[in-house]
Image (cartoon, rainbow, N blue to C red; front, top):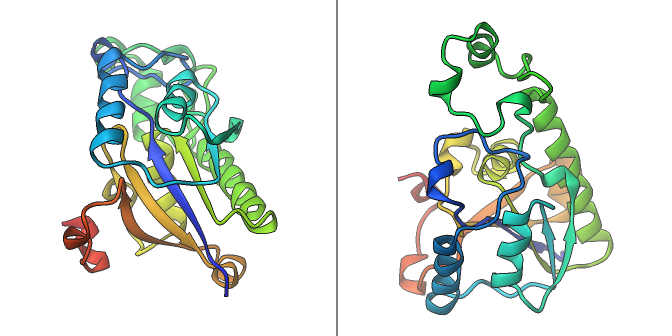
Length: 218
């Protein structure tokens, strides 16, 4: 039976001064270092070819697409935007420490949203609906290879929900510009809503890819 490959790739790095801050819907650009790193990865390892790219509409993702897939059709998908941190956008945990609502959010972010932001549950439901719609489109339109360029937290969440081997979200962490390759087999997808994680992206040299599934987590 025909299967489909989707590459889940995290966007390039943003400005170091933003590290440690809640940067969700804030539309920041890639840093010059981030752009350079993507070009270096492209030249050294190369990103796998694909027929279509789905991207978060935020600039750090669309800019990543234009660098690593300059000649590939790109479609932005709002569902793949980063979590909305509301009034806490751009702030750090140090700045928010001591605020009762921040303490409550840390205890139960699934049910407690930041002021004017979204809960962890709403975030997960949004991106899962977007992913299922995208996978169904890939199958129905017979797009054999595609990529989703989005945010690290989204990739981690999606693979913790749909990925085989099964693993908690923190096991699916990746550096900027890197990600995972998944294989969608229609019979498994429509029956069990699962995808097989079979490699990292960009692909390692052949000698390095002869590994069991469990080695993803070593």
